[in-house]
Length: 286
Ligand SMILES: C[S@@+](CC[C@H](N)C(=O)[O-])C[C@H]1O[C@@H](n2cnc3c(N)ncnc32)[C@H](O)[C@@H]1O
Image 1: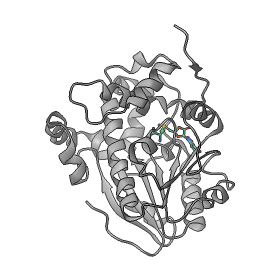
Image 2: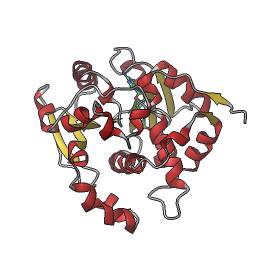
Image 3: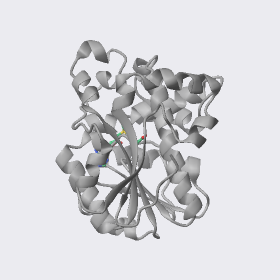
């Protein structure tokens, strides 16, 4: 079979294929958590051995993770319909396709090779810009400012591939350039990093089939409040304790699984977090 797009990606960049495939596989289930026909089309258009991920439970986990981030972005857009969502490490995410309200703005930022691929599959418009850069660079903020405030930054499964020093630098840069903004990102605890190194325990993990490495551990996202003055953690969830509106929209089979997932050490060690980077804080929906 001839594929339209061959994949040439660095190690951390290649991981963008996992959530893409997760959304495609979920879409084809009988009673899916989410439907993403675009992800199905993209998987069909890419020359890559996706079948090696088949059977991995973490594919469904990546879909649930995306729904929780969507919940926060949708809440921001309800409060600020003309604001700008900045998607750090956008990969081949279809969040704009899922949540666009017709007037909001969107900036998608990713490393050059990931962005090259993204630009072959998605279109830039007046309201949607794509930036090829690392979040650690200091070049992208001016491009973001071309879009209207307020801003909501989301980094889904991205900052874990940076070192802790670079993650701090990226968070500090966002805070200094966009004081008072909101940033959603996920954190992985030590348990997960320890087990990344133990092959036998990683049998079911798609990351085992790639060379990307998780770089830093965070057991308690409240620690991030101490990185700079003015950072406040306003919400934090595990996949087993999603926000109520996400939970109630899940298919029954998935809701029934949550308590079982909740006792697993890997579920306890992985958290999705919402921070305000400034002094104006408000509790998000728990
Ligand atoms: C697991 S994928 C997640 C992709 C997307 N957020 C999603 O949920 O579908 C990790 C992404 O982080 C990007 N990434 C890694 N390091 C980055 C950096 N320093 N700056 C920007 N993006 C980065 C990769 O290129 C890749 O697209």
